[in-house]
Length: 424
Ligand SMILES: NC(=O)N[C@@H](CC(=O)O)C(=O)O
Ligand SMILES: [Zn+2]
Image (cartoon, rainbow, N blue to C red; front, side, top):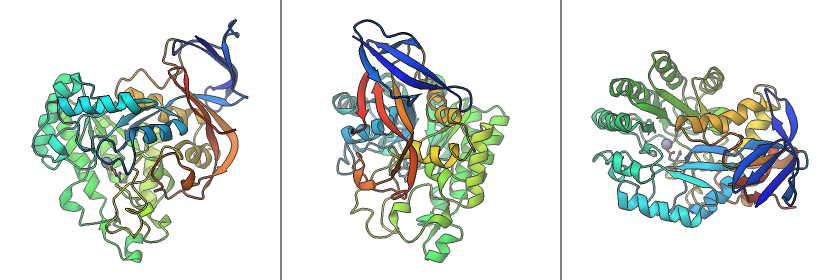
């Protein structure tokens, strides 16, 4: 079975585009820029750009255990609509992937329902409770892409250190949600200016940064590869930058919302603006931008975190942390930062695909002969308004409802098959 995708534009250095085509056979790219093979099924790309399918290393699919928020079917369909073809699923499910049995259960659910590639994390501790360490070797042998207790920080340095030692032996990456529980102070948003105006308890920046500072030293001592989730503060950026300069094997991600928004944008006590880590100050946001551009931060990850309308209905206190991200990530970043000339199109695509894949040595996120045929066609001209009611995700929890953006995925191909196509 041969498919020929014609009339598409490759993104070259900077913002340069080159008219091209992709030939697919048995789910793999066999030629780029060739002529139409006889008897091929033809897809007309209508002159849209083609990007490698996006790779998201931080996502919450909620199944098993929280199917009222999202399922593997709805979450992966939402991701496909956003142009993602490979996503890593965080372990805060019920059960947690902390044993061979649970890992296999989750693998079976992915096999049954996912429309794109889902790579599950194994947890660092049993039930992500920070107490009993998991056997990382057996989780890795059963498909764990890397290890994390995302949703909570690992409080004890010894637990983190010992799991980093295991990870170093396995050449696995430890992926950390950095949050010191003694510094949360029941906060629901950033401890700064806006929380005082709204009369809401704040989470200080040190809640995140002190744990990153601890962990990079532990990673150095253990010789482990260490990846920091959703970096949000300027002090965190400094800790990662200094660690990289010292030769420590650290990588980091930033979320679209921390690049697009800051505490002063929060309009009211509305839980669609509540996420962890919270929206920080303007100078924090500026430091995240600088860190992406100088390579301190390696990639962009959505932290897609769906919750129900009921859970998010009634103010910040009491609502769970988290916002959805798959369906808005590319258009918002493209519109706000590429169209304005701050970033090139090539940079944005790299941060959302190959740079993310490289953290875990994944052979995805590039358009190359021999690679899995995972790519997305994007209409850079189409302008649409973000409408949470129209999301494929079960989640409606976004602060971006009503934003106008350009650059919408129109066709997503995974392993040579169409997994999302814009309604005509
Ligand atoms: N980011 C969030 O605000 N929430 C995430 C957990 C997490 O990624 O830390 C969730 O699972 O809801
Ligand atoms: Zn987290």
